[in-house]
Image (cartoon, rainbow, N blue to C red; front, side, top):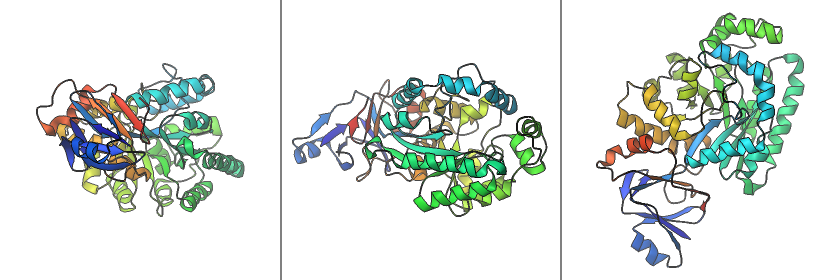
Length: 407
């Protein structure tokens, strides 16, 4: 048994003072420090610095590790030039992204308080690293392939990767999952098979959706910049699906759709009705020039979202707190205190609910995943703690995963 106390604890009831948490691998009790020490006299008491806030461990729902070697190879500013640069430099970037590089990024996420992340894996190369990472990893085996001629081969490879992730040692904290690359890159036949696999094994499911205007124009009209892209690289000029057909494929299973920047209100309403959610990546959206996700509409629709970093193919760090600060700037029209609260919720309780995990909240029975944030001075107003957390924290002070201190 361990006991940890901080000046504030972020709970489902808000920020609370003068409390401590008793835990093993799960949270056993929340009470005053004296009460817990009396009840558990043999427990290890963990101290935190002055002006500290105990949070549930942060959750980064959408990360690509495979391009972690990228610094200046890929072209930012607009989606299609970026995509062309991915094709041009993909082989070198994947080759340079060895296990040491990827583990370094896992550790960087941890220093920003991330105790769980969703790793989108195109080839399965990240599995060994994710097994050794100190965090929980929702390992999304990504399905990609729009050519019907190779559908069986691509699906077979995909299922081999799914089985590999299902066979991981339980001690690795790997949670197998499935990702669909995008509506323009996955044939409907194998898409439906993958959704059925997710349903059969109750695996988390994710899909990129309506990230760019080019994607929307291609899916709606078979025209635009993606038309020349597919003709050049894949010798085709006809999209394999459309927006509605793709959305309907997920009707029977809740899915975490990534980006959705170019989704209109009717489509967002449909996602909300079907119980889906959105991964919002502010920096990636800005760097690729695809627009701003209207999170104010999501709130009106009751459509839950998480804030996530995406990968270093379209970002400059995997630090979740960097992402939240960028989000405060991107959504300049929103009241800043309320937005900060919403963002903290998006990487804790919202993210846990979206991924179907028993963490994300400091409450009895939840997994003992924590991040300790130390503020530079005593907060004068409790309602601003979330804002000061986002603005002043570059790295957290302590991190616990499964009840064990990892930082």
